[in-house]
Image 1 (cartoon, rainbow, N blue to C red):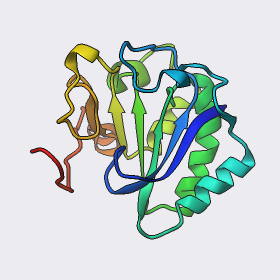
Image 2 (image 1 turned 90 degrees about the vertical axis):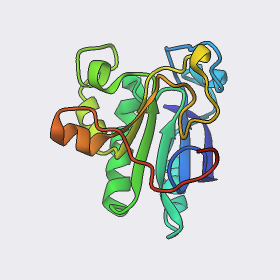
Image 3 (image 1 turned 45 degrees about the vertical axis):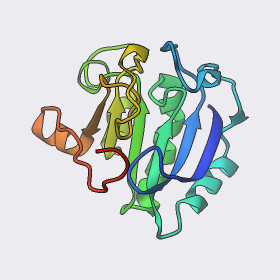
Image 4 (image 1 turned 180 degrees about the horizontal axis):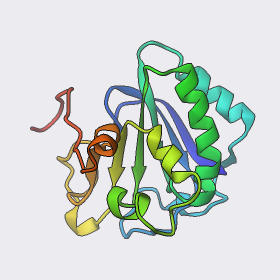
Length: 180
């Protein structure tokens, strides 16, 4: 797996101060995508043991609320194969930190049901997420006033509550900021 960028002090991609990993590779190719260069599965740098160590170290400070996975597309099957072992380490070392993930795939239809994205890693990856922002970016539905999403079709899902209830449970914002 390759990645395009690591942000070690990100406040735009999830609640609180986060470490964000922008993975490479995406087959959605949404018109108006803010990160088109990451569509290429070989864009950026190779994700190595040193990359894992760098991310785990960046997550250490108490002011870091957690990790966010973006892309590209974290749920491309070849990305899941690398991310799942890494997420196990994050969960083991930092059980109190939250893990957010952005995906163009829909939680209930494509990640929980049969799809191109669903593979042997999907259920375990979902089990380690706290929040999933799902749905492709739709330029016609772009709304800069939305919190942690780019277009109004996208959902901010509480994964654990959704898995427990069997229904989509949307995340409830705790920290208020910006436009209300």
